[in-house]
Length: 113
Length: 138
Picture (cartoon, rainbow over the protein chains, first blue to last red):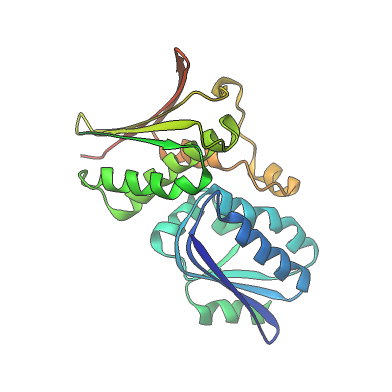
């Protein structure tokens, strides 16, 4: 079960993800990211309350990397729990995406970009 | 210790499978991150079997077995009667290929290979069997 909230905050879209993303719920992340990517705004993703992510969810993030880069859209995720961070690290995603510890750091990175 | 779960091939059941693995591993002395990784690896194999081998047909079932004997390893066995997956012909895509193709799949087995110490696929009678072995540090 996953709960995703998306709001526009000034110059960026903030997507908050709560719960678990697996093969049955990854579509919800996909829909939220699609909408944010199409807005052309910078994207901030709050994963503080994400307890689990499987390849289906990671695959959603990976599938947008090319388009975000092409459109020069900044995306920063933040607040990963240690167990979730480990899953990102297994695939080396920390080298392909911008990951911040806190919302403050994430906003700073977005503003610098 | 041996635990077994038989469950219908529905993606909605992945949550129950993760809960089962979590409870089964409760008897093994592991930290949260290690437990989480093993749950993930089993979830990936089950998701593949449910979606690709059984087309999410809830009248079909998969078996998930957890064995923690001897004490220096945990073995997960996932069995189904669906379409056989040929691990021998599986070639791992590169991350660059996955990114440029914009596909949403392709990293599940990559995760399993990096988490588990051994992955074996076999067939016995009408069953396809995936056996995952994780060695535990002393």
